Amino acid sequence: MLSPVIALIDAPMNVVKEEAQVQRCSYCKSASELWLYDVRHRGIYRQLCAACLLKMHSSFFCPVCLEVYADGLPPENNIKCGNCPSTVHAACLAPELVPSYVCLCCANEFSFLTPLSSLSQNMQREEERKAVIIDVPAAKIILAAAQVAAISMTRAAASAWSEADKKVRDSAIARKKARDSLLHASQRVENQTTFAVLNQKKNTDKKTCPVKAEETEKPSRGMPNTSSAKKRMVNSEDDDKLKAFTSSFLQHRNIRNKATSETGKPKLAEDSVSSVKTLQCHLADALNKDEQDRLIGLRCEE
Image 1 (cartoon, one colour):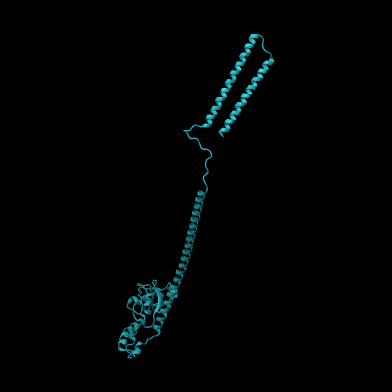
Image 2 (image 1 turned 135 degrees about the vertical axis):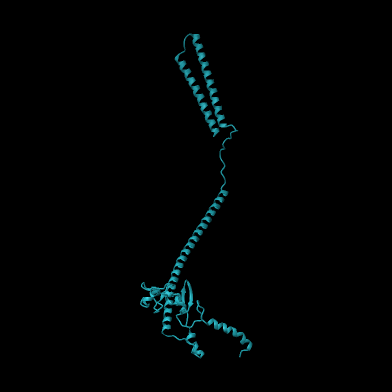
């Protein structure tokens, strides 16, 4: 047995739960007398009653005979309303109404389902007033609303499948781009590391290997070249030796001329030959000495 305080606290909660359980139409906000239909209208999923569903999809069926068109597409010979996209069969409409046809929904505030309050005025008991009365016209309306809801949800499913396929393709492309970018980044990092390792190895090799000293240094402009000076000295010595040889030769010739002038007779050919031989020997010795001195000087320069 609950206390009165707890009962008072629980009472508002029970009322909220009962109101939450009541199904209401998303458009007219009225409590559902029979049931609601799930449809997709203008990209939004809604729960609508039969009357609101048929009003929002008036081009899907004939409002006179309540026949739903195949795939929601009306035939070409149908007569169209002047105010809305609703169409009607030419056989369902009187010929005099064809030129100025206006559907019932546009002509007045028409509802496909009659409110239950008007049908249950003579019902005295509460249980009878809550009862739902379904006759043949109401059954046709409910069937038409169910078929229209099925067409709407079929189209919604097809569009959802196409969107899902598109998202799958986009995700595959994005995954491929991400994989390629990661591969490119990894290759770049690897190249940078190898380049850094090679530079480090090159620097270490430079530090470990000593630099070879130059064996010969180029003479500066300010300092004299010793090799050219030595060559000049050798040439001057050769000139001096040639001068001494020529002077000795001239002296020898003068002596011979004097001897011939005193005696009046020239010397024999043997004396001249011997003198020539002696001169050739002296010249050969002088040349050999000059050549030896030149070779010694070149060796010193090397």
